[in-house]
Length: 438
Image (cartoon, rainbow, N blue to C red; front, side, top):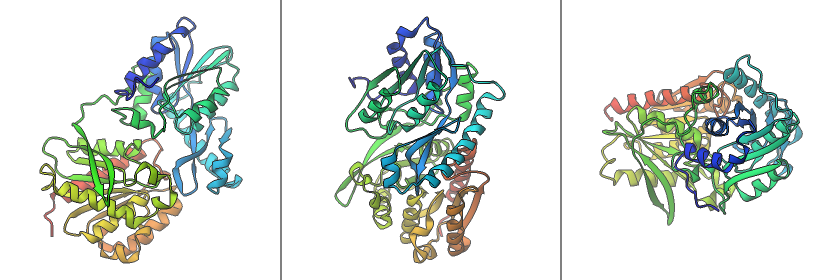
């Protein structure tokens, strides 16, 4: 059943899905893409089936202290879908869920204005409706999308995804009239693992797809070559991806945050921007898949720093990278690990950028020893993390700088926010690369 894996990119997955949905051709179905990755795919499917395209706006609800982990989702109507078992385990009470839903609902309304302007969505009553996304992990977002569509009384409701976790697929089968899925690998990991190219889809790609211009399912720009690498650290083998443009001006090693990985769409979007500016990037997993299931290990800063140092050592022994300025990009708990490594190796780390990071977790003693120029990037609406970064900045002194992205939340999901982060990071690293080491 999984013979298609890995998909080359979203475009290939969409074409394969369209073939599996061919029995709907002639019914003029409404194909609803879940932004962002699902929309350019839905464009391809809608065109193949002679259907109509629209977006289904839903957003996951992040767990307390770990926004990347979904505990549920909210749709444009404000209807909330939650996994009560996960919510209780992570301490997400009713008040937290309501606040998180209100925050995401405001973001959904902003995205509706960006994507559709004043144009109303397509009426779904009596229509065949196909809801498309690039994959299901927890399935919370798809469940919310299907329930929102069901509330408009379609004649038939279909869930269409290239790849899904088996348990999540079983949950959506209870809501949809039909489920079309090309692969259900077990055990299931991050959706991006099942694509060779899982580059980020940006808001402009969604707008282009809705305008009938095909969008950009694979992000379709010419990219520098990428290579899979394996790093050894304390007897553990860690997987990574190295991307290097011709004559790179430096190497940026990513330290992912709690609950994240090298497949993070956000980090890959930042990495692509750095690549376009002539910087090589190394994205690797600080924890093995088994270790990442232990929430305590995600906050073991000393262990994460040890793994990051192993990546630095690996790069120093590779002929193509050994003479490049070495720089670190950390997010969430990964930022604390990056600063710990910078404090330990002041002669090797040329610069650090923290995206929504927790530098405070490195400890005051570590922060006081950092000599690498450090840029702290925080969303203006991420108030708790912003306060912690201001405290860290006071300790970093002249070696630190804080830039607040107005209106942005912890994951920088607002239109243009992550793009701003990526450009600021590229500028910071390039300036550091031009400076002679002290």
